Image (cartoon, rainbow, N blue to C red; front, side):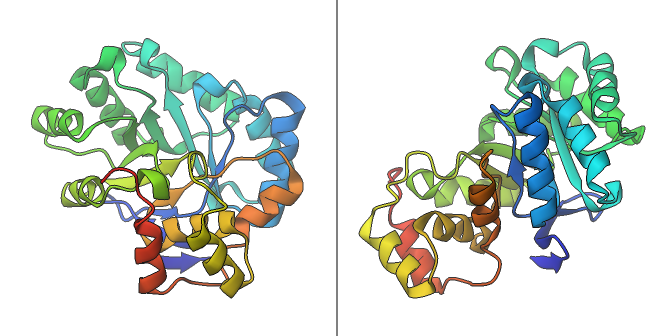
Length: 264
């Protein structure tokens, strides 16, 4: 883990690309609400924005980035290929780039396994787009370890990132280790969903740090070097979610939060 102006980062396996561990998710944010939320996020200090073709907000995100005055090179930008667009990878990415008004994204993911399968031919198209410079890195979302292994066997190359639901309640050390053994960065979405923010462990640690339980959960992801992308359209909550970079958790506190897992 290293630190940049946008906070701590993790290095992707190929190309030395630095990905901010704390990002801003935009699922369910559309229209003016999406534009306003991204403007607040960028003004707050987020330098990692996550979107997808299926979110239908790329145009607003691109306009917010352009109007913010933040240099494009300073923002790590992710979008995703819908599984139904497998076989139309080139035209989909071209539409993404037009909507976002950028020449290149930083990370392009397969949003879900097409028809529940690894789809190596789609993965090869993603790799080709990266090699052409239209995206700096490529990865997947909602893939299992066996499906990732299918891609590795077919191409000799693992996804840079796998974006999956993750939280203390979903924490699975074996799954995390399996990703790391393959050189795949784990990125967690829905970090607060399914976690009891009133749990005494979180409440106690939050009180000791002068933070909220939600902030403790986000910091817990950072301590594990798991990329996390909380989402909100509420300015106060957007700012609160970013305010997790001025404290750390002890190994003992991290272990106590690990113990909230329901996967064991």
